[in-house]
Amino acid sequence: MDHQVIDSHCHLDFPKFNKDRDDTIQRARKIGVDQMINSGVDPKTNISSLELSQRYEYIHATLGFSPHLSPEATDERVRQMLAFIEDNVARIVGIGEAGLDYHYFNSNAERNRQIEVFKQVIELADRYNKPLVIHGREAEDVALGLAGHLDKVIFHCYGGDLQTMRNIVDAGHFISIPTLVCFSEHHQEIAKEAPLEHMLLETDSPYLSPRKGRNEPAFITDSLPWISYLKGIQEMDIAEVTRKNTIRVFGL
Image (tube, rainbow, N blue to C red; front, side, top):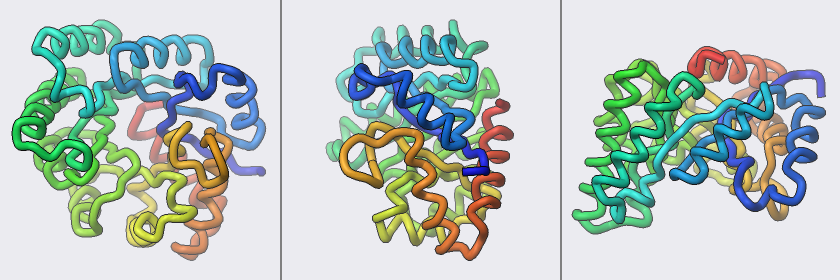
């Protein structure tokens, strides 16, 4: 492969990579994935994401707090999590993933707590002028309403409706297309409609593999022929523009 591409969202610190982490990273580099952004989801993975970014100069960390944790998290736990992000804010390229997940949480109490915590994360991103990486499952419109005023917002693994996608890009923000685009008709529709100037690419490794088993950053290249076909734009241009978008939004 002769064009370079960035995996804008992966979890290389997760246990699924314990046996062959470095090999996985080098495989991606060999095939043209020249940078990777590793996202924390909780206190433990925030630490391991930072460690990865210190070990490899081409891996960057974002520190976050998954909405899956919010309903159970005490105010003290949230305070500690925000303090950790704040203490390390100079060493990260973004804040997140954080946001709302209405797929797994459907009571008003749970959703309201997610919103409460998310607002504090948004405030932090605003204060330090850091890009915010949003997990917005089945709540993309609500998340946009809360965070849309920020300078830089990335809807990671975007799976919402087309109208919300248009609202996101009209506000100047970005949507990230996951390797799901290789087999999900809905994500193919999104990739076809989304303007390339507002698009990032991601694997969300170890999840959402376009092949059997575990996903890994090298597989981001599987997305290129699909997006190329859907948009009628050359693979090389898709790799290059999404790469430039990622560099710009995260300040790499």
